Figure (tube, rainbow, N blue to C red):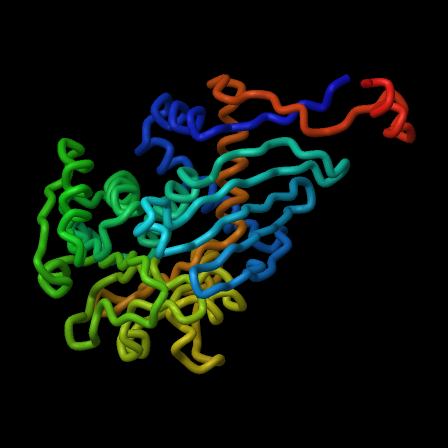
Length: 342
């Protein structure tokens, strides 16, 4: 019997998202990630394994809940845009812990964009000011539209204020979001974009200690969704903003290396987001507080996303079988299988 592994290609992933609906997929992913965060203690956890270079980073992100093992391969190369290439590409795999056999192989360039946006909106559901309807997105690249639609579907955002130093990126984003039920306001500066916004998403790509927002531009009573600072030496927010904020993270040993909090002392207090969702820690205390979700992406979110896609394969049929695992008649006779095939 052949051990065929379901494979979701880019083409099949696109068709699956269209079949289900992008906002439904984002909402479903947020629910799946939230459910796994509630059972946080069941997972193996480790900071991602990163190989850094001057050009970017290549990473492996593994985890297991004792029944299923999963990992993602992902890169981050900001200079790729100058070559007409994606900044981020990824693929992922799930395997059965009992046998070690793979049970799913999938593209994750599109899926990572979806799960990142879903995680952002899930966090904001717990941390953002009540009744927030306006958000600013600073950095209008490949992730921006996913963020906007996730916050619309999950948090009820109705207006999005857009800013990017590249005017073409803002035009692209506004064009892609046109007709999707959002009021879109292109802005000339980051300061203009955050005017009246209760939620501020920073999602720029440069691998640098940048200052996208300065301390004097951010008032009280907002939620900051810090997505772009996600590796050592790559930040977006002025340090003083962090000192005024209640900071929420995914996995502290990873975030302290990669996130905005790499600017702070190693013992600076942070709250793990899973604790808020599980009712073990306080989220937003009051309307005047600044909350910051210092998001770097964690393996459990990819695990949740891959399991969600796996759950949709039979109903959609949007996969193909790969002959990845050698299957000799006698498990001890792999050489014989090779020779008989001649």
